[in-house]
View 1 (tube, rainbow over the protein chains, first blue to last red):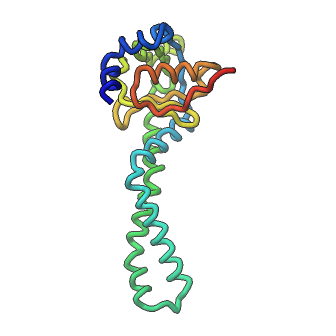
View 2 (cartoon, chains in turn green, blue; view 1 turned 30 degrees about the vertical axis):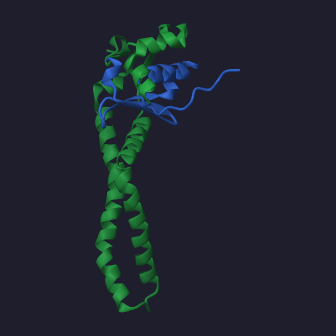
View 3 (cartoon, rainbow over the protein chains, first blue to last red; view 1 turned 120 degrees about the horizontal axis):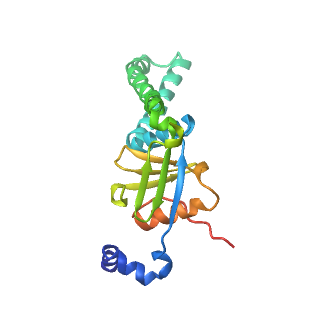
Length: 143
Length: 61
């Protein structure tokens, strides 16, 4: 661990140790014009990953509540206590459903806002190298 | 933007996401890359961004 920490804090030394290929300048230029579908997909994946610690237990609860409600609904002969419980759980079930509906809706709203931005419509030019990423949000030839 | 401006990187099936903050990211769809550029892009990210979650570079035979 100590050695790794030392090497990480000494990136130049690390590169010298690893040989000349690391020092070689590598760069690429990209023109990116986002499509609605891929922006929505990325926003949705991002939202799902960000909320995963809440959405996984919420999903389990949703399945359990849904199962209880279905069983009580199908078996009308079930005891009154269970029917009362099902009635009480229904608002919680609807709240969970609303939460899961809200995730794609929020992603859609965010995507629509991004797509309306004129810079997104014109596309971005990225120059990627070891120094960093240079982003031009406005292509001169498209104005 | 210097590489220090980016907090992390993630690769999904059809794109790369380079995060500036927890909720803001630059999206690089894989369809925008020429053949071979995806591996180069991965190498550059790996060299400059610690903890990037990327797919391994496929070795060429």
